[in-house]
Image 1 (cartoon, rainbow, N blue to C red):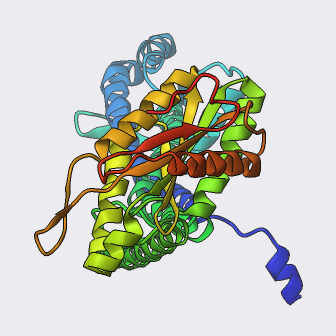
Image 2: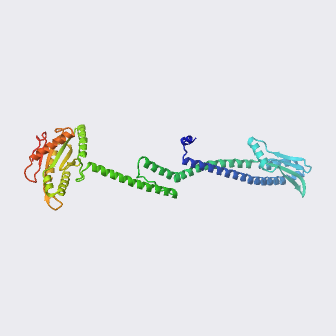
Image 3: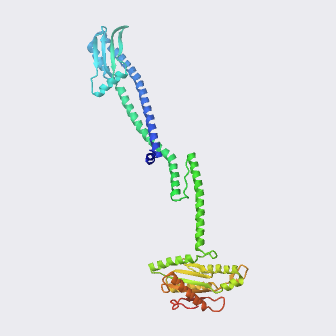
Length: 425
């Protein structure tokens, strides 16, 4: 039984409200329509009886002379003249001996006329009897039975009114249920939508809109406050994760990418170069005087030199180029895309020339350093990351061996396959 209840499809709040509004509206309009119809019938009954008495008195005055003179034809003519124009089923005139003198009866029609007559006999007085008086003496009497045409029309119009009001009530109930849905169910659905987004998609930036109903608005505000806390906590976690990811892939001193990050980028760039037929170049940089500066001025000065070198190298690169610190005083530069070897040589010369300016140390002293640069070009010097790194490293050591005396000089030596087009500065 419990399992069946759990698996049974649950109805929606909107459906419940719609059914409730529709049922209440139909019941109310039905009771109101029936009550108004009954009251109307009672009022019309009084009016119809009063009208029949007036008709009876009018006939009484008209046939008085015919009764006095016992003129049956004149009495029949008078009855036909008056009764045919009024809602009269039949009328009879009797003389003083209670003998029928004249009569008139409406011809029977279809079922509608018979129904009107039955309604009249049910609701109106059974026949209206009035004496015919002449000079204070009763000379005869009349009997009159009414026709229920007005009552029938009123009942039909009342029934039509009830049906029309019922239809209008159904439409009004549906409209009110929609309004209620907009006022109550709408905000609840918005709250549920935001809750589902927060649970399934971790969308903590969405908020429940305000509503005119105080209780629902307060509930939405409390839920929004909870979402604020969850969003702040999520942003904190994301920030911590990004910080950890950055620390794992970047050098803490210079802020440059580390060897692992650089090798990953180099692998992806090589795959793209092979796929699209592009060229790229790898520069291997090594400081010529770093150990001397570090031993002479201390580690703080050595760190300042590394930061300055990183900043100057980065300033000479293009938008899509990448510089990384591989460790110690070694740096690597990835130039991609590379259209001409001369572009790599030009950038290497700019990097070497940027080291000519003195570097100010924390204690105010200035030192000058230089870089030895080795270049390896894809695909001439290697087709894998290891081959290119080894070729650039070998070219760098060859450049370092040919470095001229003097602290301001820098050598840009190229790998064996590049030496044919390169020149020693």
